[in-house]
Image 1 (cartoon, rainbow, N blue to C red):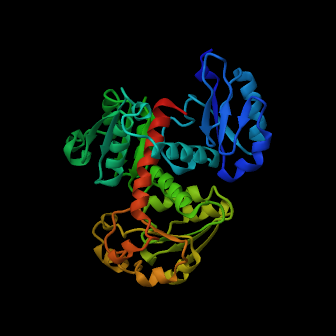
Image 2: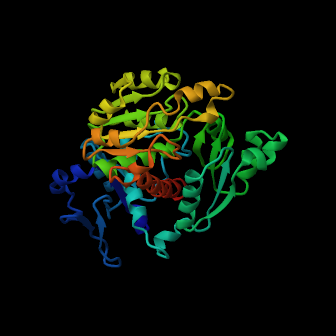
Image 3: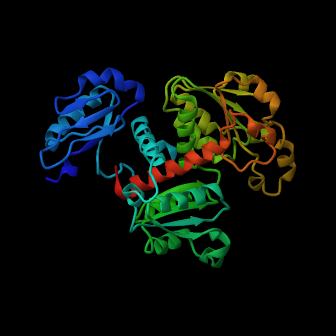
Length: 391
């Protein structure tokens, strides 16, 4: 049996590590910040970061350890094992164990050096980015993520106008064609549910990069990752979702993910014409998540760990520009909001912004939105790695 086939990795909260360290199986040598695994004489012993645990005996014994650790609340993943998901379509697909494991992989991606072996793990793979709506950060971060891991990219920037869709080709036919050229498709579409339709007929992974007013799961992943990196925790946080909550797919996906953590409270702050839809409120209620609607951004900002601002999406209003003008500019993050915020809190935004965050906020260290965009690169590197080569 190859050495790599007898390895498994475990995902765990950092704070859970300390009390578990004394319970390491006898096959492990534990040290303060790393685990060293003992291997046969023809292999060298290696020390791994605390986010990865390795078993060197046969798989059946690994499975026994895995089961016992799962009882302790730690979920283990076989190294080299196929990722649990075939596609990334919606935030509801993820549980907290998988989220924690993805975040550990993303942390690894932050440390990959140029021209290292790790920077070539996707060599020979080809990703297609098929975008029917405009995008800067999402498309470029996916393309950068693929190339930083040694893969190649086929791209179309505006498939709605500059692909056969302009001739009337269906999404299904386009997907069936493009999957013949690539190993994975990143899809942005103007219709809610488009990614699910694509995944239903594709034989390769589909990643939803935004489907109209539906969902944007990788944005939600990077948002939660940003909160963990900036605030240091995900349980027990208060988050204010501000702006266009009716049309904003980012806030919908984020709400689904936040519901997976303990003692979270969500505030909704929006103009009346773009309030959060009832399906999200009902979902949060069903999961026991405390939520509240408010019209006072200053008060909410003073309570929250995260103020998540979004722009009012003019493109979703069609001909009702009067409603757009009524909503635009009602809630703006400016110096007055910063004064109300706690010192540890952060301002986030999926970008692009218009005038809903004033430029002078950028200099405040609590303005996390450009760091948030950078974290998105590492999350997408992790997702591509997991979908294409596994854990």
